[in-house]
Length: 291
Image 1 (cartoon, rainbow, N blue to C red):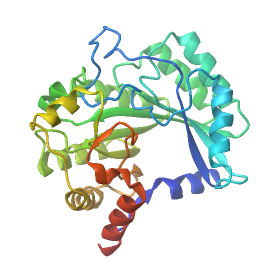
Image 2: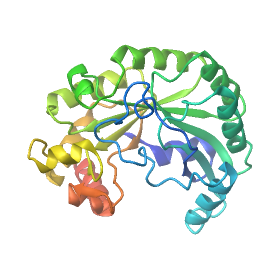
Image 3: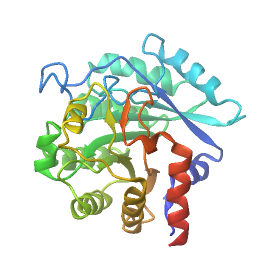
Image 4: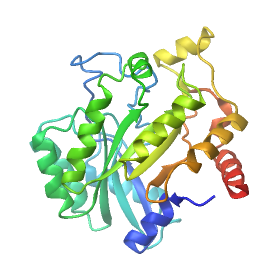
């Protein structure tokens, strides 16, 4: 099965191997600070999905340098993307955002900046800043949509309607920013039909897509529901079959940034098979190569 994988896309665009360095910029989220809620999304870890990011106690430059050291043996002479990953990375005053983004984008080994955020946290000042940055080096904005279905969105406490995502994509494309959309596969109450509807919907407008397996992580409200038996997780076989169906409807102009995901092993409750990322990816790639 032919599709556009992230590594190939980055190598073609930047002319070299490119690694992402996950950064924790010290921000929070309107779903945690009381603006919308204090509990966060039902699946979100205490690290705000930034469990593999560097320490927020370090400066942006220090985090980049530490991240480089982690992969230097695999990326000799390569370049990096500064990935603002933890929590909501446009949810701060514009001057604070400007300082942190600029520190990253000016680093000589950084070829682009990727910013994880919510569609409802992209006001005019933020868009103006992203426009400015995108004229210096490429900017990717990763939007945590998870699903197009409002019933599921309410259940996971997403906190914004689908229209907010649609508007965010339009606004970002107006300033030439590359949009990556996150979807979670296996959310409670959703079957194959609903999942494929979400994939098909976002592929009409997004530049890239991340397909994320639903993890049950310690310290989340979803963990309590899993333990009382009201939430189920997929087997590796079922997830692999689903990924093949998802990839089959993703057009080649949409870059696939992720086919799965792995929660921090110290917090992972289920599915435990997802902790062996190498095995999972080998299984998925084998299935895709057969198609």
